[in-house]
Image: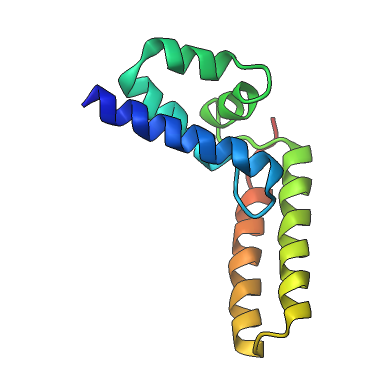
Length: 117
């Protein structure tokens, strides 16, 4: 079972790292999943992830009280706005655009109601 958790953690870690450079892919949720998987598979990998200077702080912020840093909130909101504007530029139907706006707005509301680290 530990092998499956390790593979799960590695896949989530790869997706999280890819999310750093691709704005449509969320980074922190995948890092949280990686930490979850590594905690069940390997103390060494879990410790490495939490101690990483770039990847560790967002995980620690979330685990310490569901906090999201202000800079991350602004980056996420900007990315969501850019995606919505790109969708509008491609001209989908108004219903599809409204559904997308409602979904992104709900995510933005969730993000901005979290405490700040």
